[in-house]
Image (cartoon, rainbow, N blue to C red; front, side, top):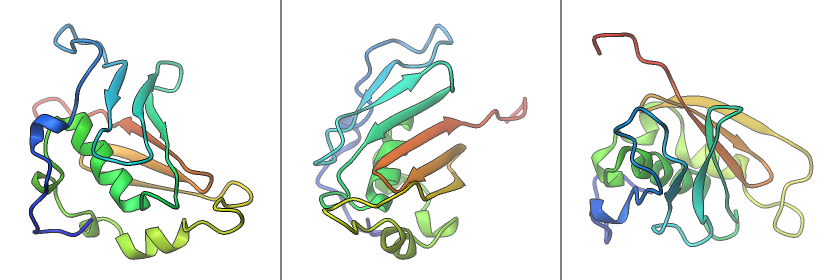
Length: 138
C-alpha cells in the first residue's frame, strides 16, 4: 500500500455488511473483497474484535491493515491517514514475511493503534482489530 496514489477500488467496494449498525450493534461481518487472500472480517463478541486470516504470500500485512480499517470505516484506503504515521509499513511487512512453507513458526505479534482501532497482527496470518472507545464529545 502506498500513500497518495489512486486506487482501482472506490469506497463502494468496502464495508459490505451483514447487519445494520444503526441500532448500536457491531456489524457481524465485513467483506474484504479488495484483498486477494482475506475473506471477511468477522466480529467476535467475546473479545470485541474483528478478525480475519490472510495469506502472507499473497497480501502484505500493511495492505491487510489498511484495507481492513477502510472496510470497517466504509471508506477507501486512500481516504485514511497513511499507515506510516503510526508504524513503518515496510518493517511491518518484513517482520511478518513468510518464513517456512509460507508461514511463520510460533506466535510473534505486534499491536499498535491506527484510525481509532487497536490492531494486532499475528505471525501466522491473523489480524485482529478492536475498536477503541472514544471519549465522549469526539
